[in-house]
Image (tube, rainbow, N blue to C red; front, side, top):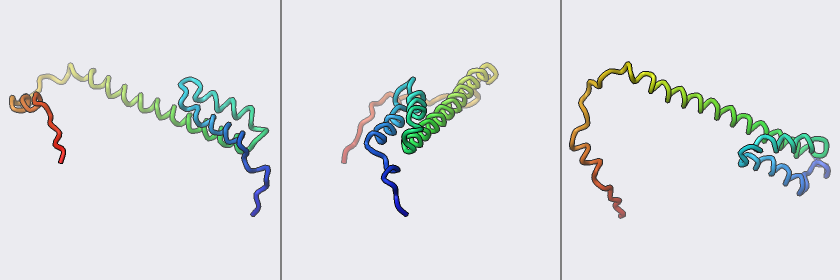
Amino acid sequence: MTIEQNSLPNQNDKIMAALGHISVLLPLLGLIAPIIIWTTQKEKSKYVSFQALQAIAYQLVMIFAYFIAMGCYMLSFFSTFLTMPFAGEPSGPSASPLFMVGLSLPQFNRHD
């Protein structure tokens, strides 16, 4: 199997691909930059086009995962506070004074 010289990415292609992937660090441009790179470079380089599409897919998955995680967090947060009026008084014993003394003591790290 031979590799054509045109299919190998040059330095500019690698830089454009890296910009597409590093854009995840930018708060608002994280998804916009790879889309712009993909639309401008899809006819010029298959390598840059593929890398930009990978960056878009990764960032869309991360946005979706963020919203799912935030939804789970908000559900647990609000369900805790909405069920508190119906919980009643705790039936178990309260914290012992010895436990409270243990919390108030400073913690010492022992280095061997």
